[in-house]
Each structure stands twice: as structure tokens, then as C-alpha cells.
Length: 422
Image 1 (tube, helix red, strand yellow):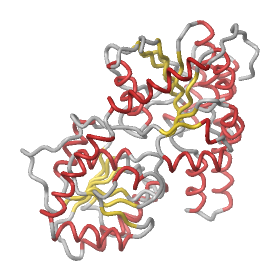
Image 2 (tube, helix red, strand yellow):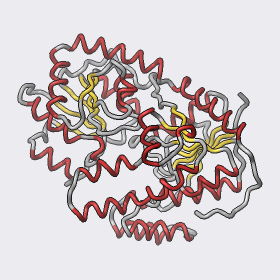
Image 3 (cartoon, rainbow, N blue to C red):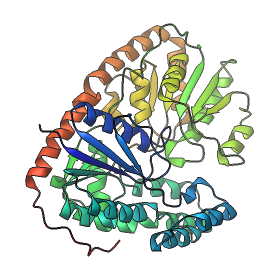
Image 4 (cartoon, one colour):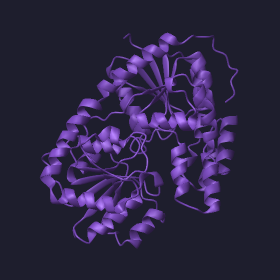
């Protein structure tokens, strides 16, 4: 395939958490290694990218870096060359909304009007601008999963009326995404489970959706035989107070296991919110000395933490594509995971799968691994081989290449104009 000039759009790309920055970095490297010229246009926080990939920063206001009104006000006042988009973003955030996807898409549209690319890949903004961009330039929209699933599980965790009103306001961008998604001709999603949910929740035609899994770098996420695993150390990846990750159930399981295994510890790769629900639960369960949070660490450092741990737990209620699942398996760490959404697609027979929202099932499964470490280490080694074969970026990158070629071939170019709403 001839070298293509590719633009990847990402409205926010945290390099260590949330998955989006990791995905953008990995995909861009895979396409670069296949011989393409790759540019990333990203809003803050910005991804860490290969030195041979051009990163264009689309700053916006980055108002979600803080939840202080004073800090947000100063961000807005001090922002240079303010325009209508900045005004809209500031007012929408003050009203409890999350406008970044919409405003980023509008800024991206302006950039594409002034520059020529063979193909654009948008990482899940599903903004109004994408409908226009796909007319002027071959476009692939990546939808890891419909955010309707996040809203569903968020509302299930709290019956407070005012909480529900605030969450519905924050997720109000779904109205835009539900309108735009059915109009997009080329959508990639990362699992068969996500495809089913996109068809159901976003009313997208099945033939417009291609399933291309994500992948992990097994040269980074690998076993460290020189490191000794701590016999009763658990590891999970979950930002505190994010209901979708099911951290509560892991904590309750830890409390049960602590009665039997005195030295048991849990490392959470993610941020702890001071004074939040998770912190209060840890205190209530008397787990303060057993739970540690780490955030802002590199992939290599995460892999080393897996290597030091005897069991990885993924207690998610939903995963579009479970990066923590694939990463743990790639590190040959015995895995306990919920049998929801995409997770069984990734694990095959190389993990203990359990029902969601079941602390007893988590504790029973962990106990099995503690009592038969040799058996489950052998299964974990086979799991690594499975990940290396089916979830490597060379294999996945070539699937993107095939789709890009098809999208470009079927695209009917028109003269660019500037007549689209933002």
C-alpha cells in the first residue's frame, strides 16, 4: 500500500490513564511502522508520541484540569485570542456540561480546511464536525464503546435526584453523538460487544461498522523473570469513584481475603480522589494499610508492577476493550475478570471469568490462585502467547490499512467549503 498522509484526531489524550492517549500513541506508531506519515491533532492532556510523529496541540481551555470555579475562571480570562468556541466551552462547563468533544471537532474542522490529508481518523469525538469532514476527506470514526453505557452504570450507583440531574446534564453530549453516529459511513469499534451496543444505542447500520481489536505492546508488557512475585499482592486498574470499573467489589473482596491472608495487599493503578466515595469505603472496611494508589507512571513501570503481583483483577461492569485485561495477560499475570462485554473476547480460556458485581466470586477466585500458583502461572503463560498472536499492533495495523484503502477508494471528493454548523 502506498504511503498515506494520515491525521489522527483525539479530543483528549491522557498519556497514562483513561486509554485514549495510550490508544492514540499505539495506533500512530503502528501506522508509522507500516510506512505512513502520521500527524496527531489533540486536545489537552496531550499524548506521548514517537519522535517521528508530528503532534499538533489544540489547546482549548482544558477546564477539566480543575473543578475549582476560580481556577476555571482564570483559565478563561487568561486564554489568548478568545473566540466564540471558547465562550461556548466556558459557559457550557459552568452549566454542568462536557462540551470538549463538540468544540474540539469544530477546531479540527478548521485545521482540516487549511491542510490536505489522505485520510482522517477521529478518536471518538463523534462531533457535529465529523459529518462535514467525511464529505471533504476520507474519514474513519473510532467508537470504543457508546458512552450511553457509562451513563447507565453511573445512574445505577446513586438514586439521589439531584445527582441524576447533574449526570444527565454532564452527559448531554450524547444527544450530539446519537445524531451524528448514524450519519457516519465508516466506523471502527474494538469488539463485537461494542458493535452490538453501537447498533442498539446509536442506531448505526451494521454494515457501517468494522470490528478491529486494540492491541498491546508485548515487548513492554512482558514478564520480568528476575522479579519475584509477591505471594499475596493483588493489582487492578481503576480510577477511584468511576462506577464502571467496579472497584467497590474488589475492595469488598479484599476485606474478605484479609481475614485469611494477613499480608494481602492491593495496588490500584489509578488516581485516588481525596474525600471521595472510594476513600471513605477503604476507611470503612479498615483497608487503609492494604490499598495503595499509583498514577502517572509509564507503561514500563506498570508492567513491572504486574510482574511483582500474584493476581490481577479486572472487576469492570463494562469494557469496550479491556486494556488492563490484555496488559495483565501479556505480563503473564494470573487474571480474574468479569465476564462482561468485550472481556471474554480477549481472555479466551486463559483467565478466571466471574459474574460482575460479585465480591464473593472475586475472593473465591483469588483464593484458588493463591492456593495453586503453579497451575495458574502456567495458564497465564499461555495467555501471554494468546495476546502475542491475536492482539499485536502489526497484525491490527494491517487491518487498519485494509480498511483505509477501502475508505479512500469509495470516497467521492468534493470541493471544500465552509458551510457546516459546529
